[in-house]
Amino acid sequence: MPQETPPTIDPRPARSGVVTVVVAGDWSLHRPHPEAPEIAELSDTSSVLKTVALDTSNLGNYDSCLIALLVELARRCADREVSLDSSACPEGVRELLKLALTVPETITRTERPPETFFARVGKIGLGLSAGVFDVFAFLGETSLSLGRLVRGQALFRWQDVWLIIQRTGAEALPIVTLINLLVGMIIAFVGVVQLHQFGASVYVANLVGLGMVRELGCLMTGIIMSGRTGAAFAAEIGSMKVNQEIDALKTLGFSPMDFLVLPRVIALVLMLPLLTAYGNVMGMIGGGLVAPAFDVSIRQYVDHVIAAVTLPNYFAGIVKSLFFGAIIAGAGCLKGLQSGNSSAAVGLATTSAVVVSITTIIALDAVFAVLFAALGL
Amino acid sequence: MAPTSDASVQIEVRDLTMAYGDYVVMRGLGFQIRRGDIFIIMGGSGCGKSTLMRHLVGLEEPASGEILHGGTSFTHAEAKQRRELLGRIGVMYQKGALWSSLTLAENIALPLEQYTALSPAQIRRNVSYKLSLVGLGGFEDFYPSEISGGMNKRAGIARAMALDPEILFLDEPSAGLDPLSAARLDDLILKLRQHLGTTFVIVTHELASIFAVGTDSVFLDARTKTLGATGNPSELRDHCPDPEVRRFLNRGQEIH
Image (tube, rainbow over all chains, first blue to last red; front, side, top):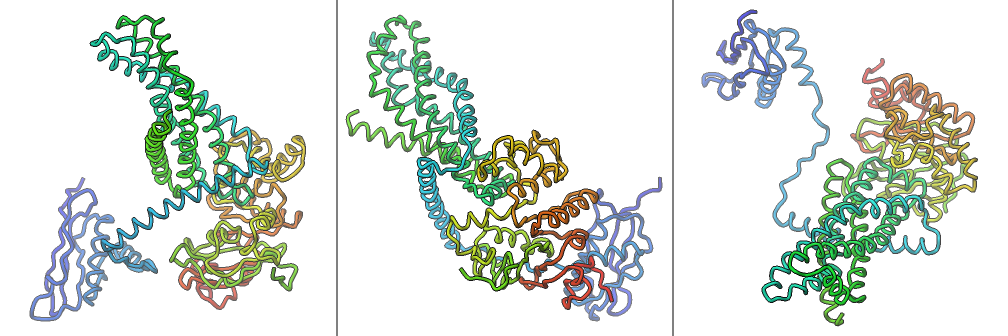
């Protein structure tokens, strides 16, 4: 193998107004190489630089890195109205150089001036108000769609509803069981340790029972379903949008609201209360597993739970979960429909669906807490 | 309702400006698509061909101007009337856009179930027929993800044809197909027009297809942001006064 010579590029003044740039050695993308000389440094003071001539008599192997460098040199020459003489170069170099320099620049690349602070604030403000408008528009469209459902005019497939019910209901049971059972146990542990000091261990039943049915059961189930189902809705509808499946629905006369959003809202509004009712029981069972360790018999625990958890208390959680179901399904579908047309946009839509539904659920739960207190429930 | 003088005109575009927000894509478009035409929308990449098709099928609203379907204004139509007008067209999207949660048969059956009173057996028969027309007989129970991209496109055409539309819009039907499949597709288009009398509106820049099937065309010019030329593609190639159009249709080689 022949020895590689390091790449060099050196300007040498030749005649007056002409500078020869000697390019020599082996040029490769995979090895360091020198930079093109600045045109301003080439011209000596005595005469005006007119021509830069390339001398490649000692050039070894070269690849695209040399051409890229020569293109830059040619552009610099053009900027200063200096001509570049490449006639002495190998034919390959000349052809590649010509090809790069004859490609037309992009026709209209409008330079955007940097945004001022106020422009940015304004844009954020407009974006926020547009976001709020979208939410109300979506609520309105969903109501219209529900109206069509009542009148029997909504175009969608009941098979879809059953399938989504199965996915969001039955298939969510294991995780709802696990989380609520654990939450019940955690509340029982934390509570019973405190209550034990006062000899009131048995009231752990009231703590767990009321805590689960009023707040934790519906909240935990809602949060689980936001992550599990709300995200799935957004991702599914978002990818349908990327794949133009939504356009296909529209041109065949199916309203995406009826065909996609309605089945999902119906399914989740039906399923979330059922899951919550189930989750509440799981939480109370979880508490019951902990209680015997602190001298509370199962019998006592059950008696106290039954006494503490009255029907209004139980329904407080269930009513909340109806709203939570609508929020999770709505946020998932809205974010999916708003998704942009790229895979990254689907990811953003999914993230935003989960964030929005969890935030809204917790905010609404706070509103309910105030409301129930005011009503004396 | 503004009646057009000529009954053979199926779609008319009057002084259409297309824009996304402030960004004008094309302005001052005006042309007619006649019954039985294979109408080509052509132009360089990114010039707004697909955008024009989205306007023609009502997925985008014109910034100004008007689109008429069969002499009836589509732009100013009420929702119900618009749905009726849409019932006469079928659209095949670039990647097929089949509903990925349904099998090929279910994809084609869905519009039939919604808009016709056919029995399930009749629907099944129609679906099989449509699939065999595009060379996909026997693929009824496959999901879109289980077949190739080219097959997805053809299934997309089958779905677009489900309700026997008067006008079929095809967005880049032969892009990404091998030459033989592309030629078969051109053949299919010609046969469908001949035997079912379907009008085609095709967005494409595949020259072979353009000359093989096109009877009329518009050339969208990205530089002037308006119509470069209209007419039969073969005639445009040889006689268009605009050198840019001739260059496009001759793959950049100017003939003298």
